[in-house]
Image 1 (cartoon, rainbow, N blue to C red):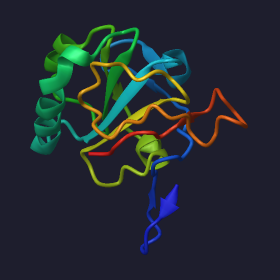
Image 2 (image 1 turned 120 degrees about the vertical axis):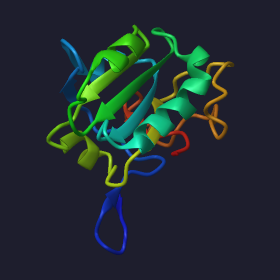
Image 3 (image 1 turned 180 degrees about the vertical axis):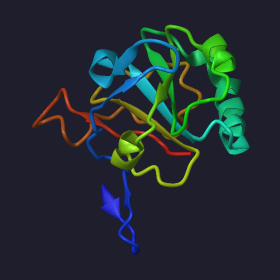
Image 4 (image 1 turned 60 degrees about the horizontal axis):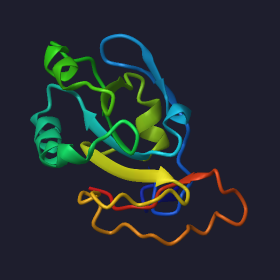
Length: 160
């Protein structure tokens, strides 16, 4: 993570991905380690009351056809509980989930101070799906971490 002039941390390409667990909006919980081998899209949406989060979701869901539980999964992360979780539960599937980060720990770990902020990340050296049109700067080259820790997750793709 790199710090800007104000000392605010911001994760950048090549940084290790902070591992985390979080409750799901609705029922259950999520642990990033269970998503091993998949492409992960994390979208820090802020408060559900902020319309910018809905705008970000609408933009992401234009490419919803690429989300697949075995290849590319999406996690929307909220910093406050939704007044009505029904619209988010209706969008939930094996490839799309919404997480609660009400204490802000996950957002801070990823340097997502300004929201919404979407991060595309993958497991190190994972294959690039041909349908990954939402990731225009993706690379098929192995990351620099491979020689030391091939199971390390790193930020490999573009930020929004």
